[in-house]
Length: 377
Image 1 (tube, rainbow, N blue to C red):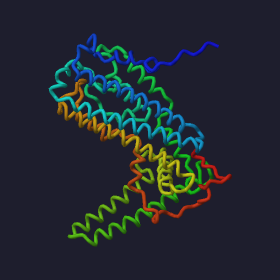
Image 2 (image 1 turned 45 degrees about the horizontal axis):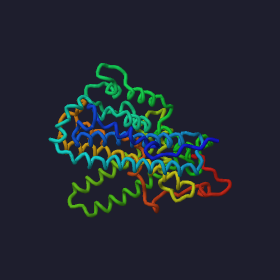
Image 3 (image 1 turned 90 degrees about the horizontal axis):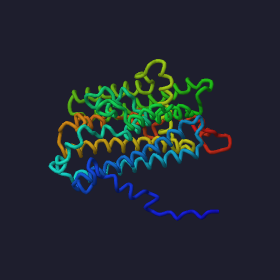
Image 4 (image 1 turned 180 degrees about the vertical axis):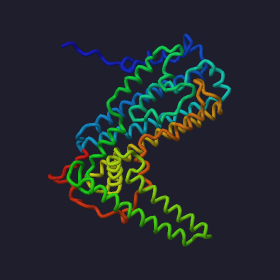
């Protein structure tokens, strides 16, 4: 047997190749200012972080997309999502380094970049696709009719970036779809999809929950009205109470989706409420951790987008972006609107204190014992 060649650090991680990639448009990085080399390095590292984020998200999606997810695998899901949170925190931290550039420093080489733009990052576009950001939810960069147009060469030719993104678009399922399918299978009051009377059980739970919301809101409103300064304040608080109940009813009974999707949407939202509300039950503890990790992941990504906008505004103000975008205005819009897991955020408005929750049915179903099987997994 031939002895294995000794592994050397610089060969394993390709140090020399890495250090030769910071020249930008010049023959050598020796021809560039320190500012420009720093700019290049930060964005190269960003793309490497994106690569790691993408790998973790694909792994999470594939685990949740299976028709049966073993309970022990939910720990893997949570660990991967927590890693993604840290990765986005690292990405956000890079903006502090970028802010060591003064406006004049950046303007010294900015013209070289046109029409390049961070919008052309195939890595970030792939992440959005894996998460499940829909075409209709996207904010146009500027003159392009689609984000794909920005990934072509100026003469219209295809690019490796476009090839990567279009290959990713062929994935059969997104993380949002996989998560929804997994949540949909959640036992609610011991009832599972396909079981006789499941629809009625879900409806009964939602009605009980809405009643609990109404009682809690009524108590809070009454206390607030007692301390109101004017009749107008009393009326304003009453109006807020009524609007809150109407909004809760619309969300719980999926009045905001098409009729053909309403039953599925109701069950998904009921599952979220059920897992969050009864999270102390043994077989709901890991599902709740998955939900919380998804929220933390999306929050970290939104913070990254917002931090990006503030860095750009600090360095170049509200100039038009090098790729023709609205610059800071575009970045601010993505931070506000690019939410994929809307139900997970919306349900937080409706969660109740433990003492106010509807009575739990079939509690034994959620214990750890030989006969219990949580079919969400």
